[in-house]
Each structure stands twice: as C-alpha cells, then as structure tokens.
Image (cartoon, rainbow, N blue to C red):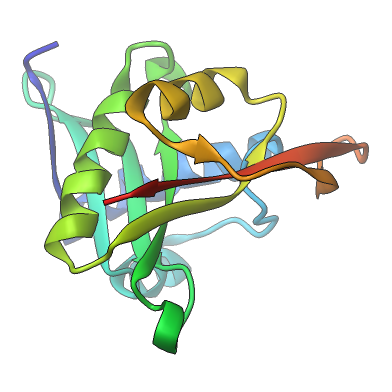
Length: 164
C-alpha cells in the first residue's frame, strides 16, 4: 500500500472527510458524537482542529480516512493532545488506521504536545486497542459503562496515553 499517503487536509477533501466522519458517528460504536456533520458544519469543525490528516490513495485520488488532532485540555494541561480517527467503511482492515495513528504522533510532537491521550476507547473496540498497545500506548484503567452504544446499552471505556 505504498500508494497511500497521509497529508494535511485541504478544502477539496471536506466532502469525503464529512462522509467518512459521519459513517463512524452513524455506526454509534466508537465516537461519542451523535450529530452528523454536513458541509456547512464540517468546514469550521475541521478548521478548528490543531491539525487534520487524511489518508489518500494517490492512485485512485480517493480519501480513505482521516484524523483530527487538538488539545485534550487547556492551560497547564494544554500540552496533552487528543485525537480521533475515522476510516471509511470500505477501507477498514487495510491498516489505514495504523498509518493515521503513526502520523498523528509525528504531528503531535511537531505541534509541541508532550502526551497523546485517548479519553474514551470503547472496551469492545479490540482492533483499535491492540493497535494502540502495539504502538506503545498504555491503558490508564477502565471507566465502567462510560460509553452509550447506538443500541442503548453501555460499555466500558479505556483511556490510553503515550508520551511523545
């Protein structure tokens, strides 16, 4: 998959980014958001992030996934970053997520962050958890029933962090 690159997003990427983001929101099993984006709300949402990276298939000129990077907190904790990753339904299982995570570590360092923290990794999201642990993230614990799934039942969440 050498034809897949991670790069900063451009305005032309917004329709694909919106579709991919909304797929994850609609799935209701990973993102806490419930409201979908449209092109009117997506532009300011993505522009407000510290960095947005997209995974592009340069052979097909297609966006396969994205991530957002931003501070996890403010002031004295503003050096801790947070990210969210979204991969299109058709591209899942192709290791796009790994490319996005690795790039987010580079960008987080480049933007002066010292730690990257995930607040709410759903316990049943085994593929993401294994990826994070393989890269070197450490689990902080478990928050019982911290995530309401789309079907209404509650699952535990597992915060993770990595020092940059």
